Length: 366
Ligand SMILES: NC(=O)c1ccc[n+]([C@@H]2O[C@H](COP(=O)([O-])OP(=O)(O)OC[C@H]3O[C@@H](n4cnc5c(N)ncnc54)[C@H](OP(=O)(O)O)[C@@H]3O)[C@@H](O)[C@H]2O)c1
Image (cartoon, rainbow, N blue to C red; front, top):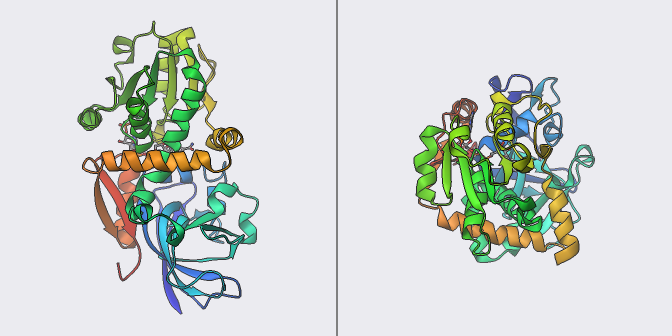
């Protein structure tokens, strides 16, 4: 028997959590038992809880108990028992796991580089999250970036798709890109990619909190940094703009649209790092705020560039940004369920500065 520790979150009150201990037996025919060695924890995981019902994130690892959910996290796992002939004990995997020490998967559609979890309850959910990378088949450089893959890559991949979406649409005619919650990994990843591209001439404007200005300044990827509340005074309303919002702050979106008017040429709703400030968006001047659907842009590029090319480019861009910011975000280890719960509360309460890169393990041996 393997002792498994899980942290569950109340699906309606995210501050309410509980630690659940389970005993897992040997994997059944076709299954593998995976020790979840480490996972990253960012505002994105809070968003998985918030949109758990709407998008289905609670469905990947159901608790079986009404009202409780397991928040998914990007992790590195190690196969510790296998009853699947094609996946060996010792293999390392990268993918979407629960906040837990162990998990059972049912590999199918097995290829050298990846497989799909075939658990029946997952088949109706967005397929993107059912795939697991078998890291042994990957270039050494990637296998050495395990922490970055948990903490940064899932976000920088989105940054790349946003960057590509803007370039592909010629910035919707905008002369400036406004980034909401620019100190988030997804936000500064986008700013870096725009800034690093010599062919991009639009002005990059990062919106952030006063206390995160110094972090953004040090990254050096914004042409202008605007502290929340100063939009009217500091943002040039005469310059057409494209807004990319990681904050989900409805008051901020409203302010920007009212300030820019018809000069708001595109408004992409990406995240909700300011999860307490979400709300319905009414009729606003300028382009209608629209939910950004990354798989749509990836599918378009798969058609144009060939299957898998968009993801390959996104990985490449992620590696570059991860290397560039390695001294700016310090990895901090969170070990054990109680420490995880404390950190989860800090995330909910905006108590985690962008300089702290949270990596978690619930394994006893960690
Ligand atoms: N739709 C997609 O495909 C997709 C993909 C990736 C990420 N996202 C979304 O993008 C957002 C950012 O994710 P991330 O993981 O990159 O974030 P992160 O690095 O953890 O972001 C940290 C920043 O978010 C703001 N923040 C964090 N917690 C907050 C709180 N409780 N209240 C107010 N502000 C808070 C602060 O920035 P400021 O002071 O600068 O606001 C903070 O510096 C998330 O909502 C995520 O779900 C969406």
